[in-house]
Length: 201
Image (cartoon, rainbow, N blue to C red):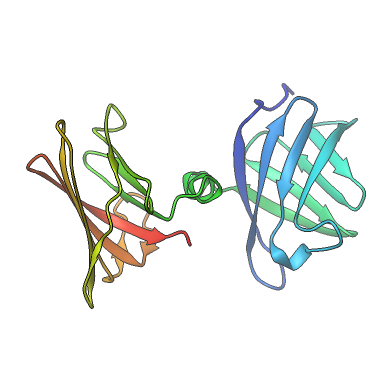
């Protein structure tokens, strides 16, 4: 089996008697970095690096009591302190959210038809990618106006006029069916986009 791609993040969802949980790995040459949930926190915390070891099939990584054994990119076996979790499957829809949180994004939203996503870094910038990723607008993030039921960002440059309105109305993404905690309306240069989002902080 060919090795996994390098320098990529993957998120897996595992079932367990105590309820489902997720973990994230980042592939590298001959190793992976792994971020485990708090339930596995130990002397070295939830982050560690696992080196690749010989395996009869798939790709196997190990460091002390932690083992990850991938069978292709969509399935993985996780073992922590002798406890095995066999039904771990890749959760590709969650990966952009996990990556955004890792990079310091405070709020993220998505919408469909045409596909778009929005990322807000408070006090830094707003990034809006639309037309299925073909176009983007990057604006300075102003101090938002807040009311009891909405948060509004309005940014204007020579190139774009952008308003983002976030309300606390629950929202369901039409593509994934995921239920998110906020409804988002983006107005860019007179065009309106509607979708769902949530805070990452």
